[in-house]
Image (cartoon, helix red, strand yellow):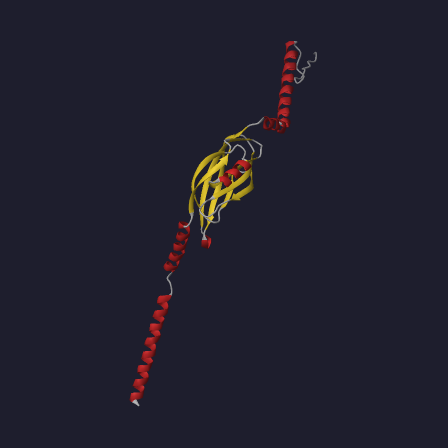
Length: 233
């Protein structure tokens, strides 16, 4: 009887030990949060290493006219097809270096400015790239609203990676906006009612002062001065 009890206890102890070992093995195979994050970062680093570094160049004139719609562009890379597109789409383009950017299979570019300074409409985009031979162009139609020495434009250059990561660059461009005769005429017409009211007030006031001075010079009371009446005793 005692022998059976001992055998049973030994069997129970062995089963408990095996169960504990199984738990240790299972827990050791699960990655820690740090290991999981490290794997994600490693993937992002690997994707970044696979990107191509190229020069970005603004394709735009040195100055634009206020109230006139004109196309400008941002190019990355170089090649015959890209040059032909630039010459065809952008009149009077003067290349301006904008620094190096990382380029991948997918690139998103948008142009931004103060809404009070200019209207911006996305235009044609060109991708004639083959492998590491990058030839990309993005264009926009801009319409400046007022003259200024420095219209600030900013391109958001985004390269999306996996797991929601994005490489973001901001590329700035400054353009001079020149005044035109048409803009000046429109400004005069817009503010004509205000100016005509001011001029009318000035003319009316000047006429009243002139008439008052003439009456006073003749010894007559001005129209706005009461005449005193004295009764005889």
